[in-house]
Length: 177
Image (cartoon, rainbow, N blue to C red; front, side):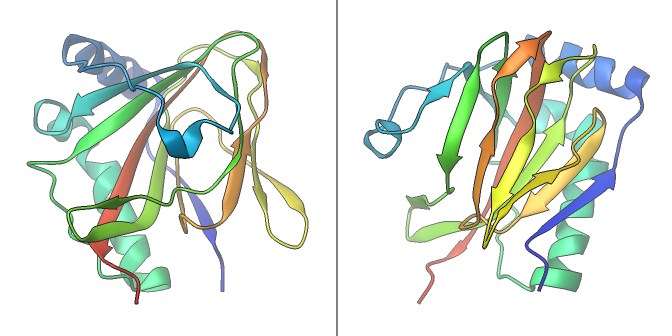
């Protein structure tokens, strides 16, 4: 079974339009949580409501749905009208150490982690890795989407030059039992 899938989504002009719209609709900055206290997570992380940006990102979210149906088969409640996204900006020296996306919310937990690279300019560092029996670098270029099982450990290496921008959607479903 594959635990991560990458796919092309957007061209540079579309990325720019998505970023512009997101910046107009940014919500509150993410506050550190107890679960993340022992994880080195440095960057700027903000919530974005889905409805205002849905028209521009729907092809990414629908691709995530199709990949889930075909390869994962998880019971995901795609609540695009009520859910929010995380807008993640990593500047020089920003990083996110090994972690899993284990979250529970209203009797549901994360079934899928869906990522979109919205970087407009080239950057160095900021590579995406997953860890199973060994560490594997995953290609994640601007305009690409990634979908992965949330309990697969993953990290972002420090950005050494430029700015890396991503969008995250967590697909929730009934509790694992």
